[in-house]
Length: 183
Image (cartoon, rainbow, N blue to C red; front, side, top):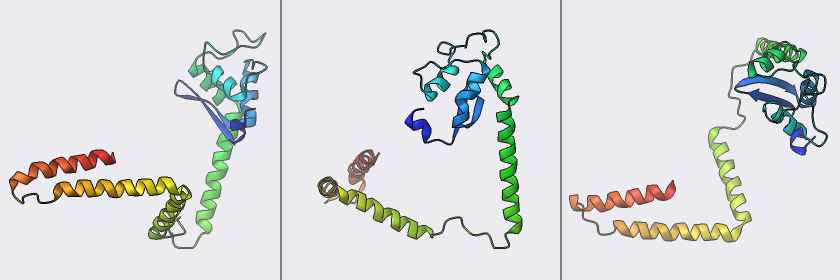
């Protein structure tokens, strides 16, 4: 199994917009092999799951020809009739019951799910971003110097502009320049 696949708890396989498998990653490969598909010896689980949904890449196991699902609707029907689908429904019902029990036993006033107020979150995120930037001091200082230089140049474009309608065109151009630089 590839390293990336090991990072997931569950796998969702979609074929033509239909859910054809959702469940534990350890079960995914076996589910499709049980349907009658063959996983090549050096094929990773992720590649196998992708290949099953591609009519040109899937390989049917010997003896399963004509018995395996071919279309997305057939795959979906097989999944809905499987024990994996029933297990998913059971897990969902258990989770919903647990949530209902927590809500019923909770006599506290509903508070925000965030422990810190918004202004403290912004402060912490800002501080963290400066720490990240300060980790590469040369780039940080270069960007900071460039920003100051550009602001002086752009600011000088407004200097001594007439307060009449003749200065509107120039101000509009400067504002558009500033907007285009930030996008």
